[in-house]
Length: 173
Image 1 (tube, rainbow, N blue to C red):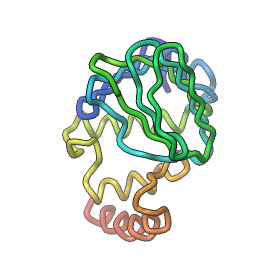
Image 2 (image 1 turned 90 degrees about the vertical axis):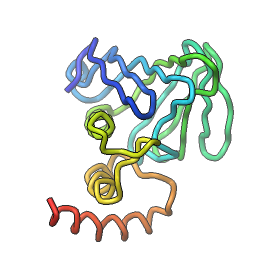
Image 3 (image 1 turned 30 degrees about the horizontal axis):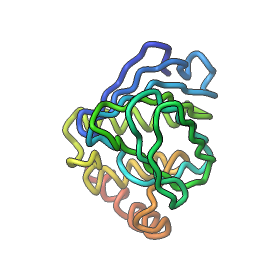
């Protein structure tokens, strides 16, 4: 569990997170972070959090967002809310480091997922977009299916494919 001041980086996607309110501080209910994204940086891809809400308040720079199919650029002072179950994606849309305060509720499982994904990137176990190899992605998708799923390929295809591949991956160790 995180506490205020903890920092983690994803060297592949250009993200750096500094915790303001950690899951240890909130009993797992809330995670509030300062999110910094380098120029050209982005989260791993368009995704959905089935039961997690996120809010973003841009502090500096420009963040590109696609929320429920609508794309926009958020400037400093703008706040965006992503309800649970809504497809979204975000990236640095400017020439300088972007900074946003991100609020995630509930936060505990989201934090576990993010630490896992950032750890894979730090260990060199992702591609240039921060995506783990197919077998690792299958295990990741199964483990964190309550936290997120990607919009492509369709969810039914992901469940079928990753179900079979995760069994193979576990068998291979």
